[in-house]
Length: 263
Picture 1 (spheres, one colour):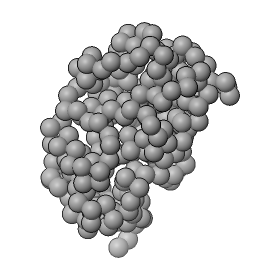
Picture 2 (tube, one colour; picture 1 turned 60 degrees about the vertical axis):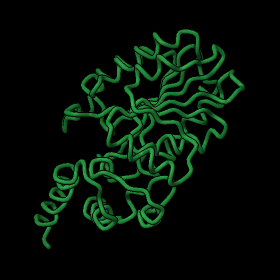
Picture 3 (cartoon, rainbow, N blue to C red; picture 1 turned 135 degrees about the vertical axis):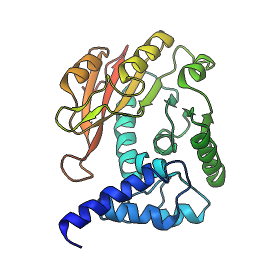
Picture 4 (cartoon, rainbow, N blue to C red; picture 1 turned 90 degrees about the horizontal axis):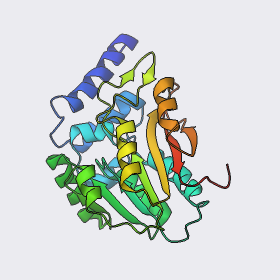
């Protein structure tokens, strides 16, 4: 297979999982082949702390789009370590409430729960198919993570949060057409816009200390990043060099009503 054929194969493989197999269950061989073709690693889609053969053997199943879009273990672990290190400097001593408004596979919540121990973890997933599958996966693995089949605004409206409770929110809505090859990820064009989500949370939890972790790409539209950062009292950008240059993800950490002591 020459370089051009290899590139076409990778494109086909990704399109297969996001097209024909988008809302269908994928087989183990398809998950591994996607990892090989796209990243040279059959274990690329490692989730819940397990390689694909391990989680597949335990009854975990993914849709095609979830296999492509999920936060894999290496990234979920890296994000959670930085979030936990920042949260550890807050003036709140009790375990935090950890929320993922767009839970998907729930793998980021899984890693956050590992790093926060006794924290309450809540996920919201509006898509019926993704929700049902994620709940089945959690049950198969015995994971004590709450996930609700609702949009994040309705879910948060029902939540009771103590005034002295630290609220941690991981924000990773669908990117849609927000990622441009030249200007990078525009946080104002995600679905819904990241800035809109942050504003909802700021209005909903006016009496709480807040910590946000917004998933970003290696290149972020500078205007959208500045517009988001000005909503926080403190912010820091972290990019994780886990993929080839130009293909890496990261987070923008931001706090409201407190500033990390290590800053």
